[in-house]
Length: 291
Image 1 (cartoon, rainbow, N blue to C red):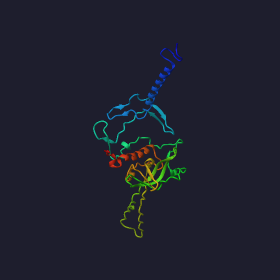
Image 2 (cartoon, one colour):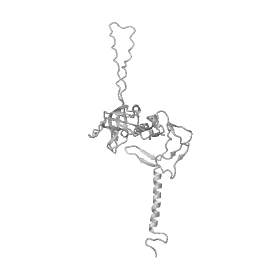
Image 3 (cartoon, helix red, strand yellow):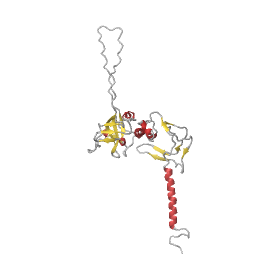
Image 4 (tube, helix red, strand yellow):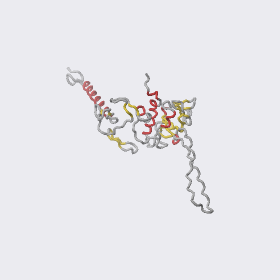
């Protein structure tokens, strides 16, 4: 006498469904692990000519058509090995790295960044997503919030690094992304006069002397840098902003924008990496052990 659902004396429908689910789930895990290796793999090792892939292997290259005429990309793809701007402090593999030059601009550690395309992030309509409020008249600061424009920005040492000039907003996700900070003006240079023409050997009788050239003056223009809003602490009572990641003098070295009214994906990563690097390298004591 057989039970309901039994196929043989050893298998029934529930058992086969359970085994089928196990096989499906194992295949799903393998598929997802292959797909998440389209970016960042194979891993690079400190040992030369050694690439780490693991199981399962890399998937077959797939083409991705980018929106707004951005072309076609393939993943995975062959990429040149990146040269790390740091030197190991010991000869063995895996030794800690010491940044070369200015550690906040070396692009390593907390200041590292990805080499994203040097184009602005776009909205669904194909326009730059992050723009200053001077180009976005539909945006305004809520009346119950403090308008940061015109307020000083202090570093972790309470030294003023600049003054907020404008606010950069994200049009796709309405929020403040960056503050545009005007750096202090440099001292005005001395007037520079144009060189005088050589006087003729013999002045003609009745000829009038040429007028002296007017001095040429150069008006200093305040440079501006972007400050990610996530690094800002607003003091409503004192009407000032503070950035604990860097010191006041470090604002002068924040990576600049190529265009005054747009920021590219690569520039966003470089700017954010600079402030992030300051969390470890801005002060000498930050990189020292706690114990």
